[in-house]
Image (cartoon, helix red, strand yellow):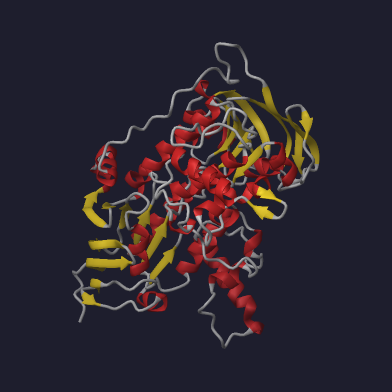
Length: 530
């Protein structure tokens, strides 16, 4: 019989090896019923491998998993689900072509109900969505038509559709805006009060203190701290455990004024958006971005901020308005023209929208530049690899092996790979050096505008600092940067100037240094400054 006083879950000495790497090296974890246990660590520390062992997706090479004091074998995800262990991955495993209700009950539909009882399935889905505070999501809507935040809710409803006793949440707030995070925390607290345990994984350390009870920290496949009190452990201590060093929570200094002005006066205008409208999403958006300036867009998920970037780039066709690059209009809805004219986009969903996961780092970097390496039907692989290698060194992509599959890289290094793509596309034949000391972008580089949508989503604290420095360095070399982020402190700390977006409208514009986080949050949530 199980021991009622035992922890809900114990993992003892878990070891997991892959060819050439020991991903988990004797990891211990203990989770109690009704607690929120936060699992922290940099990308590559072993978090994903550990939760895959717990969810039955990976089998440990050695170690024990105990459930209510009894050793169990989680042979597959179904076995874990039967025990009451549900996992919500950062990359949601939903089927876009199925409805909300079909996704919620996928894999455990009652075969006896059949099509004639579909109404009962929809009713049950509606009840689960209501429990999560999102009864407005129609159970009959295709999941592919939902925004990222809506898909997150559906994935949570799927977990609750089982008799769940432990829910693993991998970066659940990454795609959520401020009010959505508040709702997420409400749901987690209600689950914990009902005795459900939650393993919560996040790179946002401020969330840990707010929602967590205890913390386990992984580093290099080992648990360097187990069961720390979340509310009484200093952020600096957690960061030091995660990284082995103290990370400064500071942004690189701004070069000049709001328009990228330096000693020589205001910089030239590079991008102008005039009256841009996408019916049903955003309306009459107008602004300009100058060479060397970082312009931040702050707003809730669903406010239209990401769609503004996609429309500027040509991935969506505007209903009205114009986009001008160097004073010349861009053809609406044509991304190839935007790229040829010197524009690059790093989208929010880098794995599904930006990366060829099964291809090498080199292929992912050079994919937007193949025409410049082609001559009479032949590709100059030597020049292609030289350009790729130069950017791998300049951006410090790790491991520094262009032949490595990009899916094996951490989130931060995958994001650097996306940025390197546009830097290589900005090179011209014969430009600059290609050695380790070469600049990020040669003097005659063609890249003029870089659109960044959630550039640090799912990236650990150490890699964030590197990305911040990289983005500022690109701006300092004259690139105009348009930045979207769900984290208001990130927008205020990195941008020179900020546009506040609410319900598809620009409601405020100011220098970032003039704005306080509290005021921006109030504007995007309530529509007016304090």
